[in-house]
Image (tube, rainbow, N blue to C red; front, top):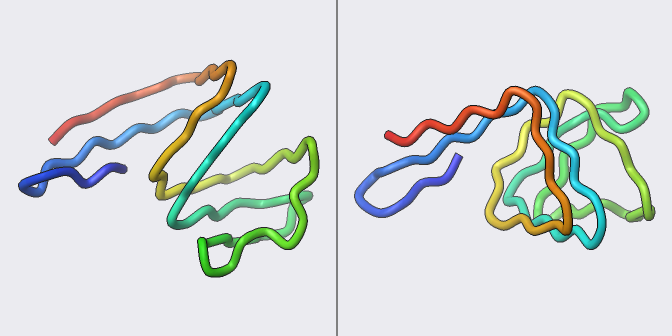
Length: 81
């Protein structure tokens, strides 16, 4: 979800999101399961270790910025309000 000017929002949802290549992700909150273990990361509590390859499930992200060489999404929905 993105909160813009004058209370406008942009909500994006996908059942699966794949990022490949040089990926940068900045989120004000990232919650998901890593190897089945629930984890929550914020700018004040970042991951203690970032591996070259990590897979998360049940992810909920308050996204600020994302860029990647390749991005694919299944069942992508975009809603502006």
